[in-house]
Length: 159
Image 1 (cartoon, rainbow, N blue to C red):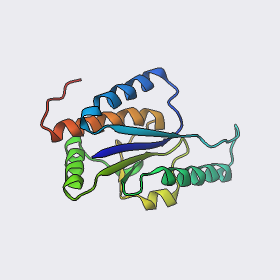
Image 2: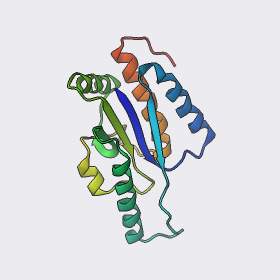
Image 3: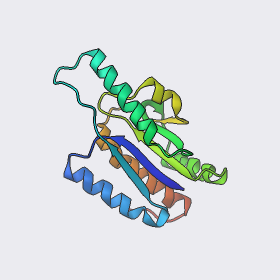
């Protein structure tokens, strides 16, 4: 399985960059994971609801365009369904068995994601009912992708 993560914005904190880089490195034996960072849309200091909606729609269109064509699309969404690490591993395994070779995880920007994007994906995944920054979720996601690969190969995992 080829994994990709398409997201809005660059990681600003060094500890997040270091953590993501570590799991990207650990993923090499498992087919790797590519991360595509799209620029955040420009918005003023005191945006109106209309400004926020415009940003969400614009970023949603750019996220959709950046997804590999044949990829199984998973949106990280606070309103999505939760699953355990084992359930994620089984999902990956089932997709591989069915012939899917690309899985793309999508992380929206600070204002969320558009309805167009939300309606275009195959699955909406939530890590928790709690809210995380879109930057923090990137680290959690790449760790869970790595963990799913370890589970599927029946390899021990210790962090």
